[in-house]
Length: 260
Image (cartoon, rainbow, N blue to C red; front, side):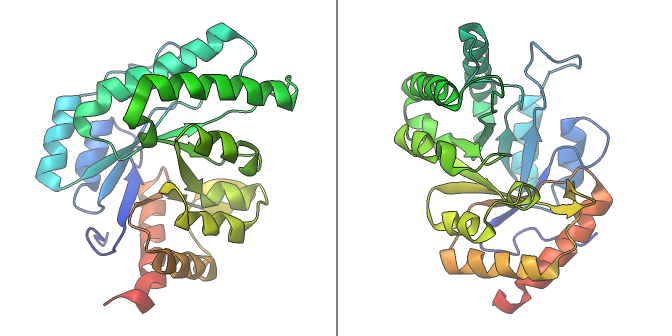
């Protein structure tokens, strides 16, 4: 597997679940290959059936030894727009807990899904999100810029004003934009705005988080990364070492015209 560490003006990332092992084992596997590892938390601690312990001190040592940075994907079961005040509070508490626990790792960002609430009217959902984000912004102070709201299955403009208004950053997931038929050009235009993290993955059989296969699309991304002067993290959001290898090779090929 060819290492691409330090090869780009932006930082290349991979997830902490490319092999079926714990986070630290994945970080050791990836440390010589990429610049950043995205620490994945699929479920909130109170909902998880698996151990939620993280060796923060060990990960900090690995970061120094392997010249790595970290990003964090917050649990996807957080419901900041729920009708239940208790569920909204649980979500805010989980975000604050993880930011506090992982602070010694100096993560570049904490990616957050603002999950839809299908049983709620859109206006009520947005009002609850507004309230939750306001509380989080007040609690986090300057650290709120570390929370990056990710585009998911609904059009991002629905929440963009709330995100920017409360001072949070954004995370651009190009795989989600492709899967849900959202405007790719408009998504890429956000690179010049407040995007601090980019997720990239392919589609196969209507499913995302698959190996990259579209060289032309990768070329368009490379062109936009260059034109925007983007210096954040581009995470290949995949959960297989083989698929990561394929995708790294395709992305490296797409970047060839811009190598100095």
